[in-house]
Length: 219
Image (tube, rainbow, N blue to C red; front, side, top):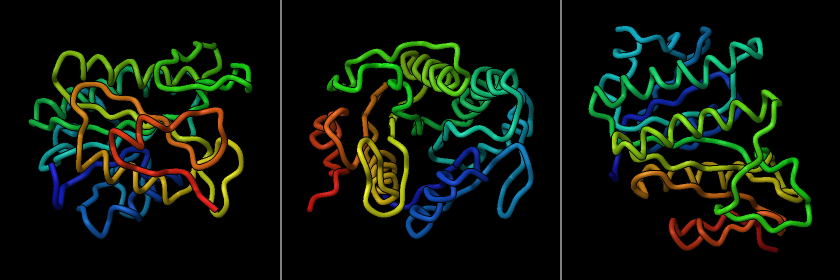
């Protein structure tokens, strides 16, 4: 799906969501949502109700950002399981067929830093809520994709930074470019890509070849 799209972006108050909106605003119509009020944000609890249905009306694609509002750990589990399920269920009922999941390479934080990691690696599950929420979000989205209800492109970014990236970090430009391409050219089904701008630990061959995105900073 190319051209101008109506895109719903979650966790609208977060820095990465604001970055994405700023990068997409010149080519797409963006609707921001979050649990709390803010500038340009549509407040929605993402319940199994008409409010979530209305949130998805007229939307072509969803960018689901794994950056939770300020909430208790138990509430984060609820958000990325029940509430994300409600959102994707409402989306499919509205005929939305595409989503981009903004995940994180923090999933591999417990592994030996000398390993070279590509998308075939299975991230280790830990009880840390900051990591577990990523697992849950990916699981819910993957199940929707595997049931053929949605095409989901999962983008795992390193720490997003301004300026020159250090090891395993990702530039804001790379984030915007990757999300933009993922929206324009969905891979179909469930697809995972690692996106870093520097370092050798995380391999980026797949995104460079499949999506023709070059996230790495070259001197």
